Image (cartoon, rainbow over all chains, first blue to last red):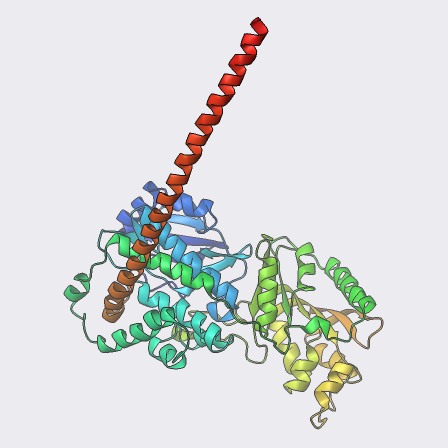
Length: 456
Length: 69
């Protein structure tokens, strides 16, 4: 049994892995809430809507202090809020509010509103923390309101009114963006919604930082159910209206400005399909596509297995891919990732939220039209790229882009060409230290070569 | 609660929830006022329908009378 490292804050229970299964234990201190969750049919309602991960009870001897053991549906690709595009964060926020509202109809309440309680499954957000519910008593305020503003509202407002990349702040602030910081960055921006939930909120948080340390004062704060629900409805309306303005980004319109002819693009897809057929996939295997852009090649992975992670540095590309896929009910998950500084392990011990490397060891990884950006634009030698990729994947489909390619010429146009080692021969040699070369094929109408490699 | 909700967050929540509630009440009242005008129109339609039905019945009775004849 290995306990999930991040499952330690809430004493209601914990998550662990046993015999390859995800297990949730429910603690005795959660008895009353658990009974209400089931008896009120709130659990049934949320699972039926696809809003909450389902579980099956495991009847066996339980550890001390635990009252239930459940096998929980495994989420194939784990992601974190700083890897989500704007629409993913928006949908996660709306789901949190709708679940909270549904809970209140059944006499319960969401006791926390952490973005880490949400994962993506079949293209849509889903709540994974089944013990997030507490009993609602008339007059109770929403204790998680502050957390909701830090985890969801602040980054959403920053993405809309300042810059769409500012979701990356979640990487350095594990409990959400501090409201004081958000308030400074949002000065003079946004309307009444930003004023209330960020500026006034930040001021109140600052002024009352030392108050309420006596628990009695916190217990004196009351809000009627009508006002509470009005607040939730208001937050839903505010978030639904949020839109990131259309932005031209470096990669957002990539496929309209490449040097692939239609014939070359079709042949590239055909080669990838051929390579995938040579790999022994199981349905639950995972394919990653680095530099996926709008996901057109990532989708080929869905023909061989059910789980595809489509990673790109560009928020517009990920946004397009997510909005295209979200109603298709597939487990293809577009995510933001900068390969030159990929998601690190963060939180306590740098282990609470896993690095992308720790989430790796997938069945197959695509590195298409990518190597020149890493090795030339970012000066990373072939050997280092190969070493890292060998930690991430068993099989590699990688495209070599030579210096004579027009895209590389563009990269070299404004800098000295110090890349004497950037040759196809050296590429094969360096990658050959970590991978076995299974096949290579030239793409017609282009100077590029597609390789199939297997980790040695 | 396993974390500190923040006293400032709770205080500001009372304010913003209050404002949201005022907005919600206004929306409900607006809906009711619209509904009142809406109900008047429905009532007029129902009267018109009743008159039409009465006219139909008269025509049908006349036909039946003619048939008998």
